[in-house]
Length: 335
Ligand code: KG4
Ligand code: ZN
Image (tube, rainbow, N blue to C red; front, side, top):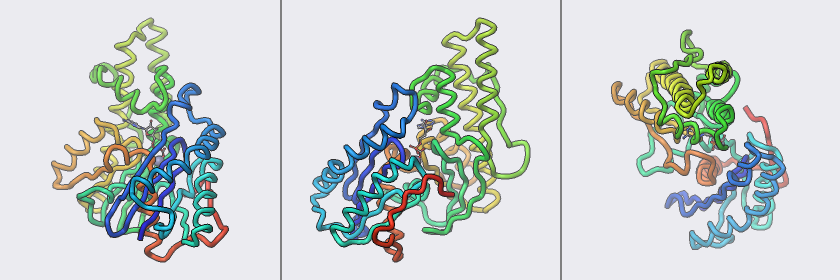
């Protein structure tokens, strides 16, 4: 079965073709990062309009790269949510329109299920069951994964997502959007011993996260340095380092707890923040000492992409799920 995957939930237009016999046939991405950068964040209206411009040419490119035509498609999967509603509608309506014209099934996929299953596209994918840490701009979740569609939420952020905290810290430090990579880069020259920020919610049992207090703590530290006339380049790097260490430490502590609580030995880390090098380094070390193993998607499938939607959609379509004709889904908030 050849499934076209379409991702348009936020600021990346992603398209891919997944073949259930042969694996990923082709994928392409258009990132809107440069377009939104001058506004310091994603402008929803601009995002929708750009998806409209990019999506059909991107689909054609993927089909060309795979040496396929529209007639070769057996089904279409698209991101149905959560995300920006206008952006989601572009992918949903395109998918439904094409599926109607080609008379093939179409299915709306949960964006986080896409992230969760992205490591399954690698050569050496994890076996089920595993624990997944999903860390993106909108979510921070720990999930016990028994199989496709068999997910148990172990814990999640009660306020800001980890990626969101990175993005807000970047703004406080006058760094470019998106903030995660910029904060991580600045943190490299930071002194890890100078400032110490709290590790929120690690002093009590449980697997939930909270990053909003850390954000306030970071702002207070910056203001204090400023008031002391000490906010030079080194101090900014030290703040970035203290912030990154606090987030990474917190995520590692909760992953350790989730592995302890479930007795599982496989950990999947996905979503934009999984690209963070220090987080990867720490999780590698943590899993090595306990005979466990950590799995990631390849770099470009850590952030939003069409391949993860094509893969997740293919699994659900194979299980007989699909949208009813004309019932396109665009669900901005979807637990
Ligand atoms: O999964 P994603 O592409 O989109 C969402 O579904 O949200 O994640 C984007 C998030 C942003 O908040 C971005 O700042 C963060 O992932 N991010 C990083 C890194 N690369 C991206 N955060 C920390 N370190 C990174 N290297
Ligand atoms: Zn995402």
